[in-house]
Length: 447
Image (spheres, rainbow, N blue to C red):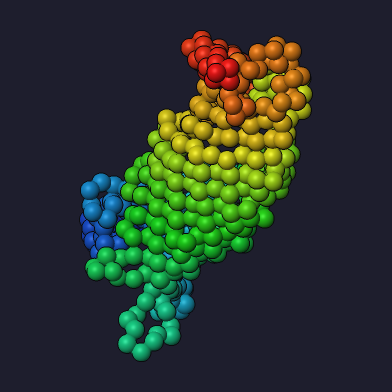
């Protein structure tokens, strides 16, 4: 009985000591370790860092509400809800490695779910992390991403070269395979990450890029892609891009070029087009705006599609009905070209042309991101089509200009799937003026 009581008392004492040690550990972490860790992180990251709580539990050390401010220390930028560190005593003593598992949830400008495991080698300053990234904003088509991050020292230095930190990143999923290799440098007292990116493929239902390569830089919170090149549907794609990550809604600018893209390959492999069309596409695109905010996007573009078999779309078949020319329903456009402006969530053009063997359309107006149409068509027709329309043939001398253009226009409203057509009457003044010119010519002939 005495032994049992002694054993019970010993267990109680040990439990009390454990509670005391646990409490003292938390007090130490909160009072001493927390400000030291904040100071070290601030110095390492060269930006203000705050820790909401630092606690010790049986599962390791827990850092809650880790907030990292922007480079200029103007406002919080990155917010990690929870970071769990599980140090291994044997690893610290023998292997000189720190093993940890973390759950990160940035909530400022990058709301995604991240799970990570990794290790840190104190002897070689080698940090290695494996991660899973879910619910990625703006590029949700890529699905869940997996990959690695490695931060380590460059071993073989050139003569006179300063010690250099290297950063390697990989991203994998069924939709993307990407590798980035970069160096962390000091540029006039500011830390920058500069390197190269290569991605054998980025494929989604909407777009497919192959053999992507680019120079990239992260200067402060500004991300740059220089001289990016890729294969795009048997053609070539090039781009320079800038994204300001120091913002909950990141502003961006893009200057891109498309050269000889195969329109048939695009229509067969992208859900953006619901029927087969063909041709070679060349384009220059300049855009600026904020990611995820469509009405902020402003841009200019020149587009040319040549040697084409473009859509026999309902949008243009309706022109045949309002002009009473049945053969127009079978028109297939072979070329398209013109300038396009993007603003207020709409595409605008003053003179975009669609050309077929039978006719030519000059389009002026706008098409909304919501599929609404507000445009008018000026039409030039072949004589055979003019003669096919009984009413058109009778009035052709009055309704057609010398170059064969119909003097009126066809206005289209509604949506691309349910368009509404209205013939804008030719001005009476134009007809009278043309009649007068005809009479004057007759007079001249009679003199």
